[in-house]
Length: 251
Length: 196
Image 1 (cartoon, one colour):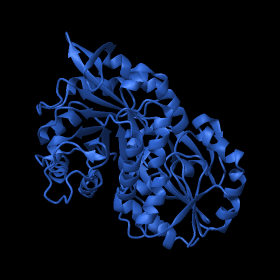
Image 2: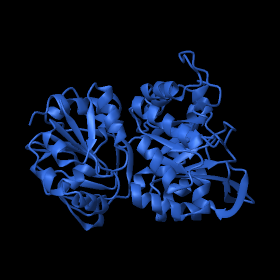
Image 3: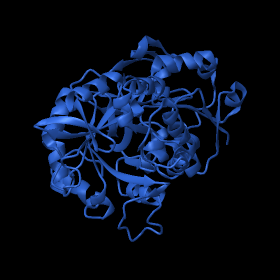
Image 4: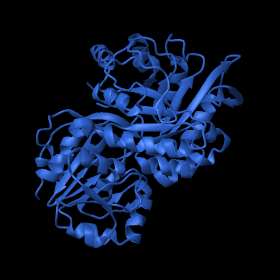
């Protein structure tokens, strides 16, 4: 049976992990490869690397890092952050990334999704959508959730599916950072209306939140950052507990 | 041991090269017919869409070369699908090595299937030291039904083939290079234990 995926997300700036991580076994707390390896060895199902650098050198630095990750990690990983052209995608895939995550650029230029899907296949196209509720309606936000748009979450999700997205990474800005659980109602609606996998993001605080997002939110995968980096939740404990609740999980 | 990875512009092939490196094997990424023919092992990767991948094979003449190879050949993911008779995706004529058609999942489950699923009914040296119900990473919308050349199956709404073997040709639907240590074991088995 296909299993639900647990995905740690690492923020990267200038080739280094950004947020402080609380791993005593790390010799270098800023080394994304070392951290990724620990997660892979502890049965993380996939990894996401989100690049937030803003320097001119960013493309080269990121490509170099992606190659280092691919050399050492034997599970799939996605790279996102500032991807705005087919050339950006080509460079990252060539360096060893399995998938790319496209966010704001897809809203500004939806054709980018179909171009990437056509050239490299839908399997490598994750469209990231940040959204938040305004007067009870889920609206897509850009630039890391800072810039609101008039676009409806569910309509946009359907459109990206039609354009060739292979998966959707949905982050609820209302839940992100709260550690109060995922946006399960919106997630369930996405899963019911779409046929591609949905990755839940924003709000992970405890094990029950993961259980809820897989059952109530019908999510295919769940992504989190700080709860894993600060060892508030150990991936192996999380997976054992989810499995004991009857959820299909790889251990 | 010379290992050739067939390069015809198919997505992320670096990962296969790196996985082999982790196992201590050097490999060459190539589209050169001579190099491919001379290799001890040939890996035929593939991600993306069937008809455009087949077009690239035809353009480089690899479509006639691959079925004639005599050494062990391993098709991965779309590579395995292209070794079959016909792919429903893009109504594509395949290489015809495996006498079976590739069809689209017709299920109320999510398509594509993305993630880790168990494999079972394991046969052949390709799965030496691999336990029944091991997890492998898969991404696909089309599948090969079970038939007499199946050497492993999985379940996604129905039981289907995740590995094939006929003569010197092997195919796996999952990504051994992305399936942790167990996946690497399959790659190692192909190099070390699959002599024919």
